[in-house]
Length: 196
Image 1 (cartoon, helix red, strand yellow):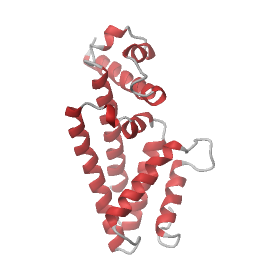
Image 2 (image 1 turned 135 degrees about the vertical axis):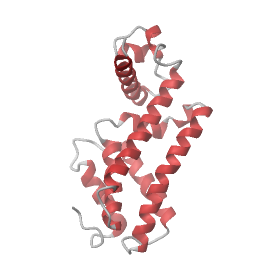
Image 3 (image 1 turned 120 degrees about the vertical axis):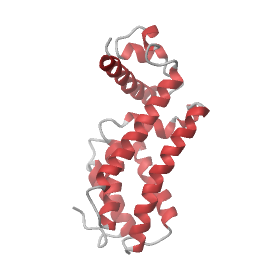
């Protein structure tokens, strides 16, 4: 097996585990379930991962990386505080509610299952992501786009956005982008954020 074949198989295992952890929970998913989902024998999975905990870590780190990259890419296209805030809301919900949402939902709801030694790295990544939010919100407060305490706005916004995984339906009336804009209008008032 070449390195790219191995990497491809590993990525398939992570995607399958993401879906299964979301559907059945971490505790309800077996290594055999994950291997079966990609057409492997259970023992073959251990060529790529030492155990189920290591798969969980890969799922969560993948979710955190995708979210951070989406925010970084969205912010790179904007300079105005209101536009940057809108870009951040949109990037977060598009990642969270998009086609590859399973790893993000596992990240949100299975942290208690993560091994302690890996948790520190995830917390470091999460803190860096939240610092980006804090900086963007502080700039928006300074520019008069939104009123209030920036740290409280950050906690409120991320909490509300993350909760959408509990009730959002893809066949509903709003896309993730439209929903992000609705959230932002609720936070800022319609006159402050021109929807682009």
